[in-house]
Image (cartoon, rainbow, N blue to C red; front, side, top):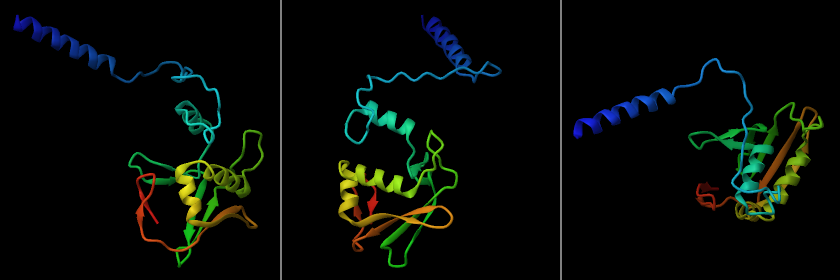
Length: 165
């Protein structure tokens, strides 16, 4: 009895390892995503539906994203600088950012989106309460976004669970 169980388990594990091998030299196919619900409202700012949030991350970019180690990495930004008093943060947009219709992404587009998001999202509300203004800065080469904090604060936990400044 035990021998049959052992043999059945061994053959099952070898089958599983054969099925888990990467597919090599197969034709390119289309990846189809089927969400768990219908997308009734595609605006992730004005709805709490998970399907809308997932859709938003697949369609729209963010200034920064997080990597596998949960460390922030520039996505739409080329980088950022912080003033000596740590009150002004300047985010520089990457060169060549374009919308689907070919129009360039400008700092005003980003600041408008951030301000719209900040009116509704709990983390955005906290960010707005600690920020004097979020404004665009135009330069000869590219554009940047300035975020000026109202005053330095003690580091504390933010609503997102990370350390806030």
